[in-house]
Image (cartoon, rainbow, N blue to C red; front, side, top):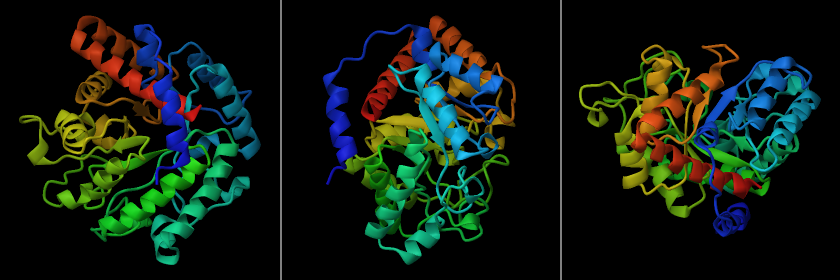
Amino acid sequence: MRPLFLAAFTSLALAAPIHAATLEDMAGQMIVIGFDGDSASDASVKAIANELKSGQLGGVMYLKKNVKSVGQVRDMNAQFRAASPDLPPFVTLDQEGGAVERLTEDVGFKEIARASTIAAENTPEQAEGIYETMAKSVAALGFTVNFGPVADLNVNPDNPVIAKFGRAFSADPEIVTAYDRAFIEGHHAAGLATALKHFPGHGSSTTDSHEGFTDISKTWSETELEPYKALIGEGVLDMVMVGHLFHSDYAEGAEQTPSSLSKRWIDGVLRTDLGYKGVVISDDLEMGAIRDHFTLEETVVQAVSAGMDILLFSNTGYQRPTLGKEILDILVEHAEADPVFKARIEESYERIVALKRRLG
């Protein structure tokens, strides 16, 4: 059955036309960025709120460094959302459970178990209740997007980023799909959007894309696409998060292009082969797999050209308050010079606005 969240807001998105916006406004919606500060009174937090207000950003990304207390988080999020009430920002975090959490018991937030434990100890129906309870607590703090669930298959027990931390529900794609659905529907019941990750599949990798180039050519199989195929078919997805994974069979010519910058993966496999029509968001574009091999301009231009809708930057590698404006300038400059690139921005803007209207 289609979740009430999705059904209710889809009709709203279809009913209201998307009004014309400037090129800068459209490009700004494609940028979600990390920030410094952990209090609503911090100058860096106020600066980010001003960028949201001016349309230079589409959202913000929380890291643990931003969480001093749940009260401060609530106040910051109220400031972010008030800055752009007509087109609310994506206020995002990673709150999977287990090792991957931004809100912890240290600040009074009730933690939940990692995915592997959830699946081992609970039915999908019970898991949905666990995730709904957690999601309601996250939503109460003003967040609108949780980057999960993990659709990766636990096929490599020595995997340094998925198996090591128990982030996958199972090695069986049908089991993964069932618990991914539970995560998504639990979040929809709380009014939160989700992002299925890490397309096309990080579970078989032997290296960590946080640290550097990650080649899945010899380990990956099409079985890893099955949760995406099933959930796309059900129409329950808000976003798909694309990882930084290289596969030689999907290379862009002689280039060792990771999936997040690859038209063959995003426009080809995800959109054409699997039929996905929704928002595509990158994994953090400052991970070693990207930042060590591409300039900022190359990253932005290649990602958008490949079909990416939202560019996620943690601002932990670049670490400068001007990063959002630099990304915006790159987008606008290339759009003004290339009608095809401009059209890509317009497509992304329409998808982003439709999702934001579903979120209310």
